[in-house]
Every structure is written in structure tokens, then in C-alpha cells.
Image (cartoon, rainbow, N blue to C red):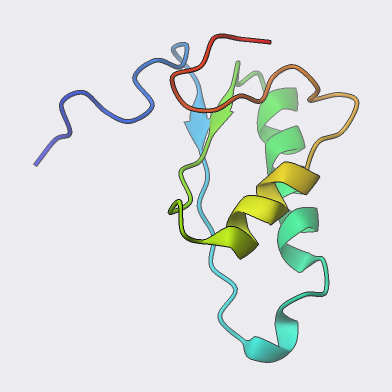
Length: 87
């Protein structure tokens, strides 16, 4: 069943979404998620995506921290909370 409206409908056409899961306890708190997010977003932006969206659950503090740490000089200003105006 389609979402109406889709959670990322405010993003420009051609935008991409990402989602990931690190389930092995021994792999947590080692920076893997942050590195993966940065790499994937930079790859998508370099390929022409105007924006990259993600939607971690509000209670998933670990995921939210990983997304907050992911910024690089190349992506600065391209990240924003869903529905928020560009910074």
C-alpha cells in the first residue's frame, strides 16, 4: 500500500533514501555505521542525487547519533530534518 504522502515527498525529484542495520553486538560502537552512512551519502550525492533522506525511529538514539556525526564538508547544508527548510 503506497504512503500518502510519502515521508520523503518534500525532497526534490531524484532524491534517494538509505536505511541500514548493524545487528552484531560486537560491531556496535566502533564507527561502522557512521562510516557507512558517510560513504553511502557521498556516493549518492556524487552520482547526482539532490538529497538523501533517512528516517530512524525517534527512540533509536544510537542511529540518530550516527546520522548526526556523518556530516562532511561536501555534504554540509544538504542535510536537514524531514519537512524542514534547507539551511
